[in-house]
Length: 335
Image 1: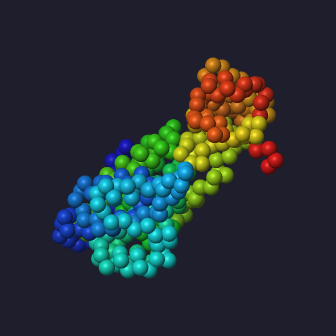
Image 2: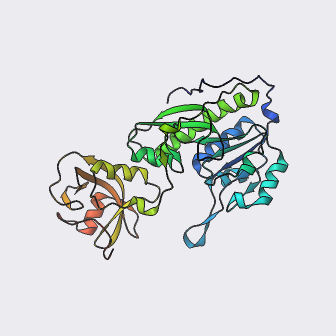
Image 3: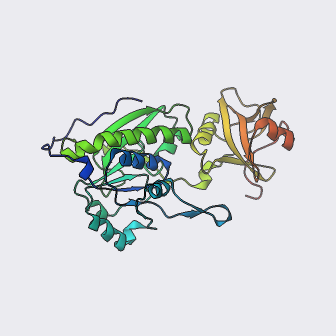
């Protein structure tokens, strides 16, 4: 991990008295990535009167699943709010305003904040964003970094405004993500984000933070993921499929179909050797893996999941499925 940097352009404000113990922060976030920042704020001793997170969702057998942020808030006795859409929840907005927070900290909340919320805190709303802005603005920066094959990504602490991740940058840190899957990248950036957040807030509070406008001409975007993004018929480069496996390892998984059954892939490597069959056809097998032809290169698979089964090694899969050379992965039959 590289040393955090603070943008040097911008006007340095007059230094003001800063007392961490008296600073009131409303936190907004949802997944484990955000929970890491919330935990750091708790550890630092900030007053957190309210945590705002996404509504609980139904899992298997209608069991309710709480977000990682809500779990953490409940563990520490912090009040939580779970709006379906915060911009259409005037009672919650009034509740936040009544708290008179010094700052709102947002990390992977999953909803866009209306101007009525952005205007509430004295020191503004800041966002812990999982990329080196202006690159990869949007909802899925960590997935996009893996899909693009980036060796490096990072965290940007930015001042929020009405645009999508367009606000002024306050601080950044770069991290090595080469060859990592989404779970690993999320953990790396979550820790980096929590550390950078702890270092940045005092500068905002005492007036020594500087703000750098983003260069919109360099902006790229990472849109919301869809389940269909994980599908492959292998009519693409092997390295592209391998990146999909790493990017979508948690959801929706990189998947294809074999004999009408969905197969999800979890561990594989891209080979540079030329394909010896049509995309999606099985090329060769050994005791621990099997190889699938791609448009260019081949994909060597080590772990996958058959529909309705648990994840298993390629060896166990081949023993149970009788995989043969020439078998073809592709679209679900009838589609």
